[in-house]
Image (cartoon, rainbow, N blue to C red; front, side):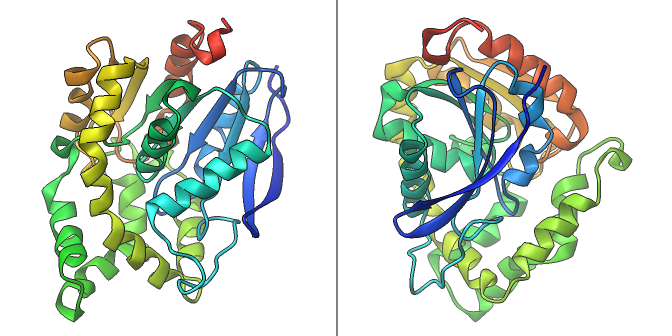
Length: 294
């Protein structure tokens, strides 16, 4: 039987951080780290599917979802800063060792958490959460990297397109064989939060910081080689943001990584929740979480 999902806030470094939590606090911890342009909302259905066995925690980053959204002059809006807040939240709620699920922006947050304390991370589930340059689909990323390298009117225009309702919807339905499986509530919800006054500048700051994540890849890959952390990749095969080569690349440093291609796109949870949840339960049941067999 699954547990009720609680919707909570905690104050971390003076900022209100929203998070969803379910499961027995004594159970092994599983941290779900969301992508762009969404929030812990993307895990609303996964949390109850796992909380019978695990203490599941899914935070919203600063500037996302229901968490605080200070102006760019009041918060640095780098991936390092987002990670610091998540780390502070985990300490605040008493999380020790944990497994993590990373998606999109959740990957650079998760990798930083792992580099900060490698022994704390017991297992990784990556759903289109990238750690290799092979994962970048150039048609999506070339414009963003051009903007990050040389911010200005000419490069900013194209990346502002990523903040539009058309592209938000595209992220959800592109590559999904049956788009009717994907609720439009997803992009309506995300777009309403993107459209908040000032949020565009927050997202642009994070776009400009994104190359710092790529610079971290050699350290992340060394962490994989040194730790041999158990890793499950459940990857939307048709994702045109992070392509399937990004999933296959994990085996270069983690030969025992389990890699499963899902016939879906970037937000594979929306069309393949049951398959992903089943694979996660099987993977995590092997006792990776704090050495506890579920």
